Length: 230
Image (cartoon, rainbow, N blue to C red):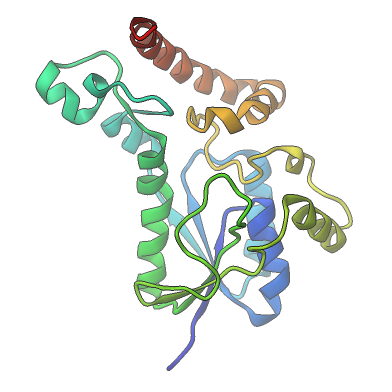
């Protein structure tokens, strides 16, 4: 059986650590470009693009998906969803689960690209101590693809220390919880995004304005419903 090794790359600390661990094996690097990545992420992506033997950029239209399915949110008012509006009528603000947004804009396009390229093993920077992680575990075979997760048992600190030894110093934004910075206007993952939002506000005010507009729409829709539950 011919083994074709790939690396799911986000530009964050975990996928970067996996790159340093496996780059001698020359994996095919796959990166999903949502069209909303931060400049910091794009800089790292371009660096690895230059180093990789093969680099696959998976382009998706995140904005079109949001226009069709709604602003991603931790709290989803049913009446403001695509299906909810069929029953309750059109609303000014369309809302979707942030997990649905991530699945349609990142996870599914990545999995489709993995299958299309014929990759049989995919390196993934998933850790057991993460709040959000997929069902795969190191060595698992899902849909015919074996998952290689070399930092599965590492802590965030161990990852950062390792990346620092490889680069000499860490990128400044690696101090954030979300180091991959996939979408600058993401309004989901609120519990874990406070530092990212503040970073955006200070360092990229023009991007923060786009986030703030969506968050304002969400609050105007959700808060009145939450108030009724008190």
